[in-house]
Image (cartoon, rainbow, N blue to C red; front, side, top):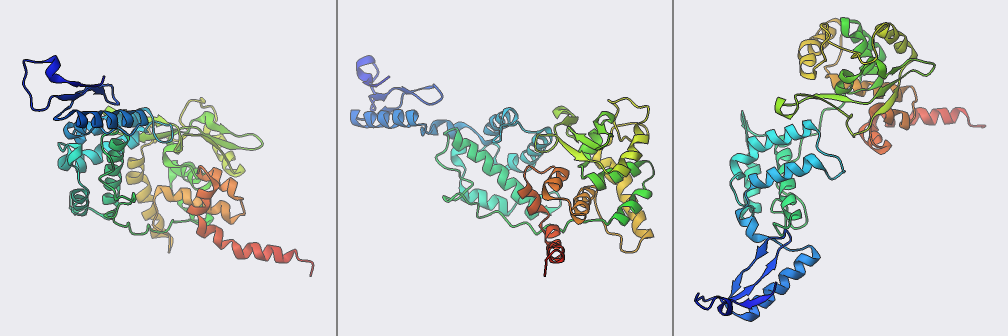
Length: 384
């Protein structure tokens, strides 16, 4: 591969651009652009071979023909095999990406060549994004903006674009709206938790386990009898979680818990005694909690058919009983442990967080409430 004069090799083919820079790009494809002068061809050849050897080669010709939809297929294939953290996408993450791409990105950008994507057009698109019922909310806009930015970042990674057109030069996204602050977590008191569980009928033990051990609903649905250890130090081995995704992506999928790792959660002795009766005579592989017909629980059905009516009934019977979701039982478990003085590492284990820092950030308000009590305990031990 080098620079040559096409007139010497093909004397019968007249041309106004006789000088050829012959090289292979980063993907191994052969390139033979033509130039009017030898100097231009040599300059281009040096520039491209240096860029290829240093990993900065840009394949602009591919960017002019590859569409956003074609890039997305390659992006999804990559994410299903490996991610930035070394783990492939979970089925639920794949399903969410596919739905958002099909609904928001494909109609606007599907057939657009990568080289034609402009920051101003992306900004206008996100600002005017529409949902099924009118203008999209801030949360949806942020999610779609992040998706598209990741996609364009992948094009940069493949050396198809010199910079991410979804971002400014400093790497920021100026058109991304702020999302209103989430409502505060709902924390039930021990009395409220037991009151709610007492009205749950066949789901009483599930409600208590969620509210005392902090498992996510998918983790509760995936529990098997063999995950319980009811000895002198009772615990639950949380090793999987269930999520529902479209059938072509697996339907109901059982996978590792969020974060990719299992954990062992301490089980209160009184709850362990209750669960001992529940599992008596049952096989280790059986689901611990099921529907009355013995089916695996589904989050959407449970919330609609069981939990929401249960909370409504509790509110009718107890003044000031709060509105909450099944996930708030997880927050309740964390709050109850903090109130009885559990250290942050125990709370981290209950919550299933990767780090204690994440636990502190998520539940900072609850730890703040303990500041004065901690000072009072110190004061009680002062020798003067």
